[in-house]
Image (cartoon, rainbow, N blue to C red; front, side, top):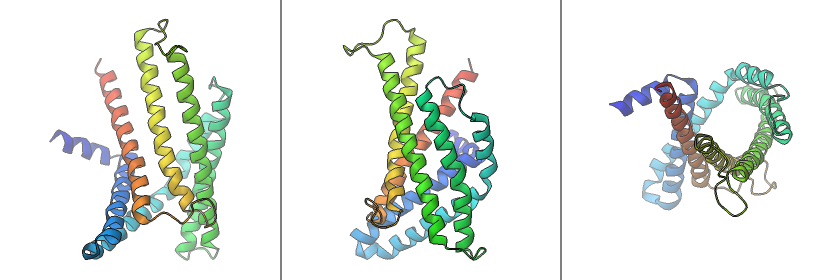
Length: 242
């Protein structure tokens, strides 16, 4: 019952619902791709799961039509990141916010072209939005890796021992943040693999992933995201109960 209540509470929020739809979509693509390629007797079921995956993906695309204001507010609040101590992280974050801000209108135009609302080349706009996504993910990978390495440098001496000068509570908080950055790094790498796959053929491994591999990368990324969200929620609940 507690699990059901937690699920219901998560589905009441847009982000929680989006995470679940994303996870289900990629899981369907993973299972459907495996059935189509490896189990000829179950290929019809596999094709149905791939259709479900495509519909869930389309659902998320439509819902993202309303994400621009939230992204704009976040970008405006962050600004040039003057509160950020690390100048390198500040530059990466500003560039990432710009890429994300441009991503949404490009995807909206591509969606409108597919729906025949606009008479423009949908492929060109899909390619542009995917390229912006790749840029954002790449910047995110560099940012998470840099942050994790910096935190590790603060936590451990060159000899491999813990830095004794840090208070225990602060050390635990830094450890938690470091592992959070590592999980974000892995999630972004999985998404980056798929994003490159969706670029025009001829760019690295673009177009070479079978459906099950796209589903696997997306499932890994989605589960890591859900785990981090659940962990953050648990931490906030624990903090509020003290």
